[in-house]
Image 1 (cartoon, one colour):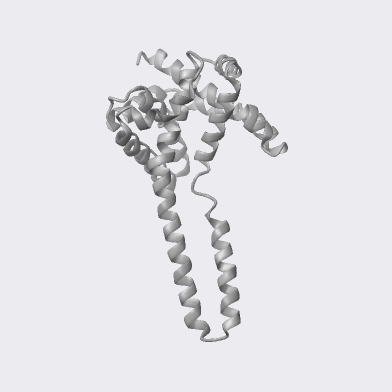
Image 2: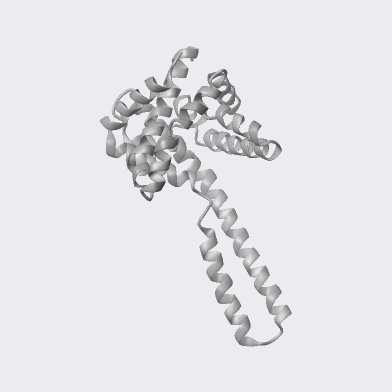
Length: 236
């Protein structure tokens, strides 16, 4: 049975052996995780400018307001659709490539070419479909009950690694194998994540610098070690 200290030590060794690449891929994963934000600033600017124009005209306020509201809703809808498409067709496959990089880095010096694995290994549409379903199921479970949503997040956590390592598997098989890998390991994985809370606090205290240049790649390298350990443990 694996221990947290063992995995973290192996993750630290692998991360330090390929430091700058791990930092870069960790930054990319951070951007992927934060995707979907950033539209509020542009909406606020449109709102402010439109409001100024309405005040200047002094015309039919009600009519102008509804035109303004329709424009804002249209812009928001377009931004939302574009964000979802970018997330689905670019960022989700990129996340798989990043996880693949860290997985490879457990065995050898990871190559940045791993980032494009989901785009050129012949299973791009399987990756898109599976990552979409993964996100959808997690959201639905979270809407129903918070705790089951968290449990499902851990149950599905091995999916990105499997998508890169097993391009011939179907979505259904990927979900099944991820569940099998995490069976009996979800609480341990939660405690592993919890062990990085100190690095997150330190990162917040240093405006994210410690997290970007040490905590995040260290955590990702350790998670990849967990994936490799579970595959060996379950004989998959």
